[in-house]
Amino acid sequence: MPLETVHEQLRLRHPKRSFVPYRLDKPGFITPIGHHLSTAQRYTCLVRSISSAGAAISINKALELPENFYLEIQGIRDGIPCTEFKREGEDMTVRFNMFLDTDFLNLVLGRTVPAQDG
Image 1 (cartoon, rainbow, N blue to C red):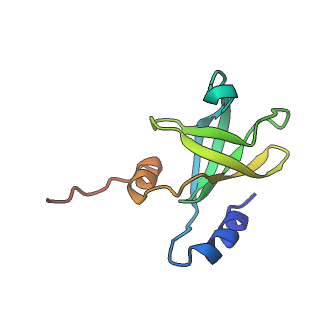
Image 2: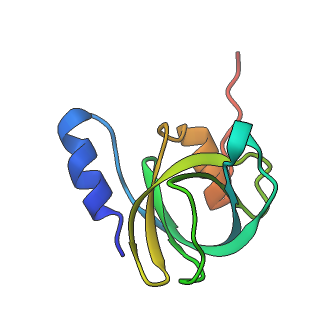
């Protein structure tokens, strides 16, 4: 399931922002947000592609999740707060609760960011 459906809605509200999807195919984890923001369980997933606005992931189709959860990408310490946008079988498209910073997106993609002199 492509990210374009998420991007189409967001382009209208944020016409100057770039929503380029990048192929990732990295393992990840979904951590549901429970009662009082508890995060007791973690489920594996595969992050197929990612943009500054959302991600396309593959998960177990029998897994029932709340609408909001954290997406963790293997090798990245921080979880990304997400909301389910669309789900069909094992394919899920999620929208990030805030746009990813360019430097963070580059880190996820494994790109090195040149140091700036200050």
